[in-house]
Image 1 (cartoon, one colour):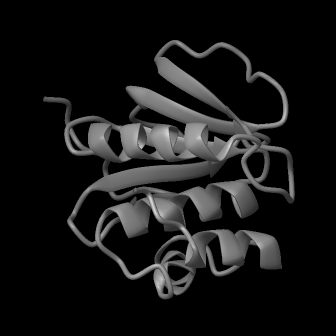
Image 2: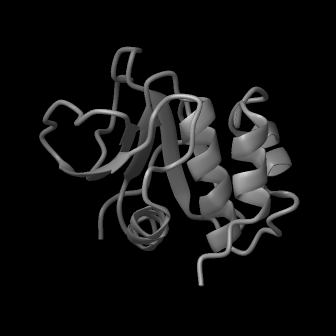
Length: 143
């Protein structure tokens, strides 16, 4: 088992206690612990990192290009977060990252209708930037 995230910048505690770090890739990598797994939400392939990573094609201010791939990627990140340091990131760390974190909260048991508010309270008050992203979370059904 990997040590969990320290309670540092961008670390979100899901209702179950799982910790996931959200961040913006345009900002420097935070000091301290490195992820053991990263889920990167970008319109183009992200740069290589020295930890395991998955790319989910997702353009800025939009929704995932492939809904089934998104559900699979989010389930994988949620599952790994039980024992690993998982990072979810997009360019700015708010819209796509906040949307993914809200979906992870749903996977973790939060009601879909409350997940955006949860992420805004515990991660970033401006997370989940567009009406389409808010609707995506409200309708997120991983089954």
